[in-house]
Amino acid sequence: MLPDLSIALLFMLASIVVLMGFGGLLTWVERKQAAVMSDRIGANRAYIRIPFTNIKLVWMGLFHGMADGLKMLTKEDFKPRTYDQLAYTLAPYIVFSPVLLVFAVIPFGGILDPGQIIPALAPFFEGRTYPMQVANLNAGLLVVFAFSGLAILGTMLAGWSSDNKFSLLGGLRAGSQMISYELVMGLTVMGLILVYGTVDLRVMVQHQSGMIWGVLPAWGLFYQPAAAVLFLTAAIAENKRIPFDLPEAESELVAGYYTEYSAMKMGLFMFAEFIEIAIVAALFSTMFLGGYNLPFMNDSGFTLPGGHVIALSHGLTVLLQLATFLAKVAFMCVLQIQIRWSLPRFRYDQMLGLAWKLLLPLALTNLSVTAVLVWLQQRGMP
Image 1 (cartoon, rainbow, N blue to C red):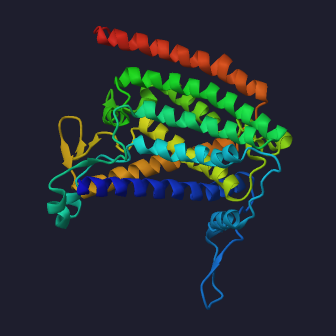
Image 2 (cartoon, one colour):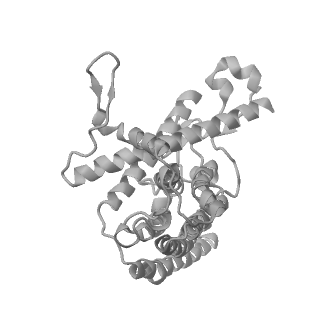
Image 3 (cartoon, rainbow, N blue to C red):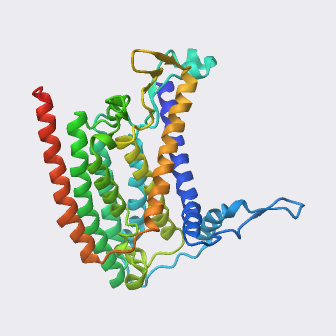
């Protein structure tokens, strides 16, 4: 009981640290990446001075995120004169909490044997092994959509409870947008469910080890290329990022559903958005990029074509899987920020029309074609 509890707490703590770290780091990445694309220097003013010296650690503006966090924590928490106190207070937490909970079902590594990593702890763990996942559920994808749906309630509550017409319009926009694109996301992953025959994210990763025709990695990206594009598009819209940031459109809604929020409550809305970039990247990496594994990789090393085995120590395998997962997540985060600074904003009618008139029919077509191909394969037809 105690060994299981200690590992569960370790995984939870590690997940929170990684997500918070990505959230803070991505605020800096967005600034610097936008500056590079605009031929500007970007954030480079905040610094930490080494005590008793004149040496200033600037580190390319990395401390700007810390300065912003301190500013949010120390700002006065202004509230509207007329508002629903309970809903207004709960809304930021209803938006922020599901973002963290979604990561609980995402596998970030293979099987961990603590006794092999630290031999001195072998008697304590008694040979127990643990999948590197906070919640090892066989219905992982269903949990992802259940938790992500809760964020819709938070944005709509924030817009309604503020008693501000701009906030209300932003909340209505957010609700209709998130529901529309969540439907597209659900239909796109159904193609993967048909291919892999499971909603367990860990099993999906295991299916993606190996090669297709000896040339391509057996990733979901190559089995379902259309679904990958549709999923990423819908996920960015679900996160309300440019070109889909209509719920927060500064030109007409000031800041949308959180116009009346200040201090750390506003910080929670903004921080949740950056953490969700990492969540989208982790989900995409898990379902379409092989997750924590490289081609031919498994929990004992590499099994190459022809049966040749490259055995790795357990500790090295765990480190390689963690590094692979984090590298894929970082790449997808940078790609999302690149998209955010490359495309113009849609009009609201264009944004909803894209979901219902283009992406939804494409998702249904992809699902139908996938179902036919899987049925033919099960019948033994080429």
